[in-house]
Every structure is written in C-alpha cells, then in structure tokens.
Length: 152
Image (cartoon, rainbow, N blue to C red):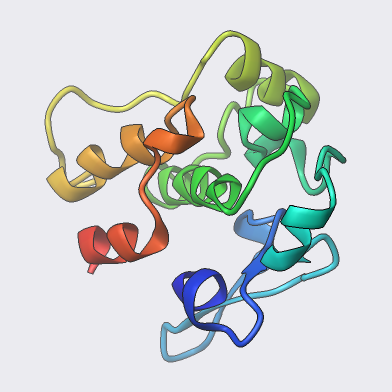
C-alpha cells in the first residue's frame, strides 16, 4: 500500500482494501488484489469521490457517511481493520451485517475491541497503531510510510 500511495508512477487509492483482497504467497509475501474500485490520486482533484466503493465492513466513516471528499487515508482506515482481523482471528463487527457495521463505525464511532495492555495476540506496536489508523478524523491517521515503520 505504501508503494501504491507514494511510489507508483500514478499513485492509487485502492478504495476496497479488505482481507478478501489481500493474497498471501507461499513464501508469506502479501499482495493487494482487486483494483476494480481504485482511482488514481490525480483524479481526486477533479472529481468529488463520494460514491460508496468497496465492502461496507471495512469502509472508512467518511466514505460511508458521504461527508464529502475523501483521499488515500480511507485505505489506512481499512488496513487497520484488516490488521485487527488478522490479529483477532475474527471479522470486524462479525455480529452485524456489513451496512450495520459501517454505520456503527461512521455514526457511533464504534471500533473493534482492543485489550488494555499488550498481549501475544496484540503486541504493543499494533496496539499503538490501530487507534491512530482507524481514527474518526482522517487527518489524524498516519500515512502508509508511518504504518510500515510501525509494523516492520
């Protein structure tokens, strides 16, 4: 994702980042797939991206609520939910239907539960990253350069 946002010849916003769109090679390398909803970042200046792309369960609040323009930080929010899913072994808000999960995050500011202290399942760097990466305010979210520094 860092490459797509910062280094690609034409930087890309994926807009549908979720666990179904991350493929794992036999050697453990992860690759992002399904670019059907993606947009080049240069398009964000010309078009008001208010369409609700992607899977609701992993959707950033600003996309679901259609509160105006959004940018690459929607991918950081979705990535945080994927990280939580990998570490917990559960779907985010598995007890809710996808639209209800998105509404919970957008309107009630709900987030999946985290332990109060680091655990084997949620080590300290992940516990520190997730609240920042799924922050309600997109401006407060780290970019993928900061995310990769934290998780590597």
